[in-house]
Image (tube, rainbow, N blue to C red; front, side):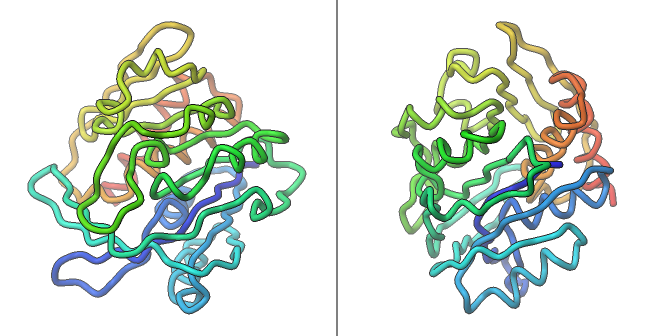
Length: 254
């Protein structure tokens, strides 16, 4: 069994009504394609609970609301494969005391920040006391300021002391430098339609993907939860990365 912790977001796309977003939502989309038990622990402002949490619950994975005061909001547009994002509001910071008591069968936990302020090092340490932690690299490099989304490498190095798996988008890896030098046992860098690179055991392995003409929002979240599910199910890292790539392909093709 796996668990995911993360803030929900309100995503604003040109010409559309606001939609639910954030890793819990997109992970729930992917979990419909995976034979694994999972629970989602999500946070947003109480005023947005009905709209956002309900959108996740409809996808079928058990979801638990963690009371919050703020909802992250992003304005998103695409220029070809390039994603443009603006931060309109910042979600809650999860403190150690905000970490819920998880089901006793949970061994792996995917922690899915939207911005660097979501999960500080002491909160990751709290989760890692009892679980293997997977972290989305957004929580290292995304600056928690309003306006155009910015990336930088000014994260707390103590965060990575508690991480077993780190998932990075290509642009995040460019900010952080050599993935193999980060000191994390398993690092996966996703390259969109060009697949992913797995760094583990001192080596690197390319994992190919098929190009699909589909909006890629949430593909990284789907990859991360599918990878964690595969690792929890006994897959070795390379096999888990291939499995996660296939799940993303199925999701985008649906």
